[in-house]
Image 1 (cartoon, rainbow, N blue to C red):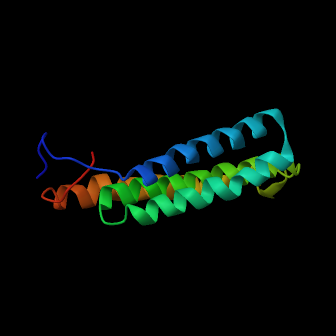
Image 2: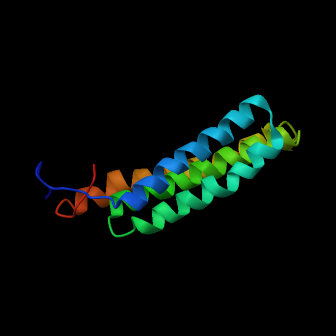
Length: 133
């Protein structure tokens, strides 16, 4: 069980990468908002790549891994949605009332399920493990 005096130290190189990740993510979303297709699409690559690297680097602490994988699938969903709007296919009906844009719900829900598993199943059974929550 963690106590208030435990520390979670992040190497400065990791923190710099995490901060750069935020910059890329903001540029991606600004480009989406402004409908700047080339910039928005280009920012998917570093934003998604860094989120995967962060998840990999934090894999030793399960709480961090779950949250970082949820962020990765969130960025994937967000990027899919953005591209569907950029290419004008977001309102194409796939089935019944489900459009291409709604397919972004698959990774969004995946992220929710990962966190639900962590909080509802894993964490209660592993309270002695280090956690950053």
